[in-house]
Amino acid sequence: MRWPTVTRKTLQKRVEEFLTSENRRFWIHGVRGSGSRTVLLRGITAQKKPCVFFDFGICREANLDDKLLRRRLLDEVIKKGAYFAGNKRDVLDVLTQYDDQIPKKLQDLQHWLIKDDSSPQFKPRFRLNPSSKKKLRDARTVEEIWTSCTDGMNDTDILNFIASLDQEKGLEYVLKATSSCDGSYAFCEIHELFRSPTLQDGQGLYDLLEKSAPQAIFHTTDAITFISCRGESDALTIDEWSEEMAREVTRKAVKNVDDDVWKSIFAGVGGHAAHLHLAVEGIANEIEKPLPSSGPKVASVEISQELRDELIRDDTVVSQRDISTKEKYLRQKHLSHMSNALNEIEWQIQQFESNDIIIKKTIEQKVQLYESIKYICSKPYLIVRENFDIPHLHVAALLDANLLTVKMNPSRVTVANELTRHALIAHCMQQYEDLSTSNKLEYNLHCWKSRKDMVYSLNRLTEYW
Image (cartoon, rainbow, N blue to C red):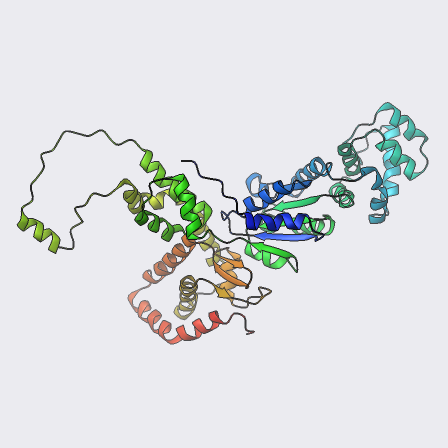
């Protein structure tokens, strides 16, 4: 099965419009697997403007610490920033205005290059040709030192030269140098700077990018990062596919999905792009499997009319109709095929349950928690304040675990996706089933007493408590 590439032109156009504007910041948010990354990449590609793209997802995949991450980022900024329009030789004034220690660093570098000693102060990322070295010996002013070193260098070498002025501030200097040129940045999965357990100073790196990058798009699949870091910047939140769009994409991948099967798929995973892909892929694989070789023929048993009438009357007997391969998949193998996605949601639920603000010591507290979740899952969304200041602790904890996500225009929160909705409801039901009989009776009593107030508070998240 070949899953078709989906272009969401309206969303992509928002990215293109930002890159041609004078605005400095743009945020893109969508739950993981919703296609938000694809929207970003296609918008950048279509615009054809020099852009440094860096995916902070490597923090999770490669377990990078702060030093290695900054080195990776510096390499990427130099490689792509070299294509920014502008004269890199004219950035000396920009650097000296930014840091008054630049003249001294250039003089120290001159001394180090002439002496050619083994001091660990510098680790040059460039190489001087003999004529430049001769000019450097005769240089007296800062401008002469700069000119002697950069003459004959291409743009990449100049950025490497700037990065060599200070091992600790190399990335900072290169970002500042490129800020005077014409180009953009796109930082994917920026939330890893705050979420990754291997980083000690992710906040410091984010502050540096926010301060230095001339024009940047920040992409995140984390709701709390989006809420806390976006500020007043323009933003785009990615919705799931509509049923019509999801059906059209599915039809291109698998031709013979009938209406009943489609309704089962969409009820299970909704318009979440990645989950829909998995579900349809499972059906396609089942269809393409060769039929098992038939065994010896068994004589058919003739059913009398009396027995047939009895079977019809007995509703405990499974229907005699044939069950298609697709229906068998939906009945038996669907959950196993979605195991990775379900395991990820289960991990998110565990993160939610272990949050310090979740208190469930008494039956009454459990009622408030799990009945709130069930009510949230029963609603398409909950309206919140425009700035996403959410005082409800249960809603805030669900957002922190990315079991809920945020949408704009109007500001609202909704369950991350249909699979998450089913998992949350199942989790709440399991918590109830694990109670003793007496505790169930107490649970039901508290539910009857407090449900009205609980629903009232969730429906009025825009009001101050």
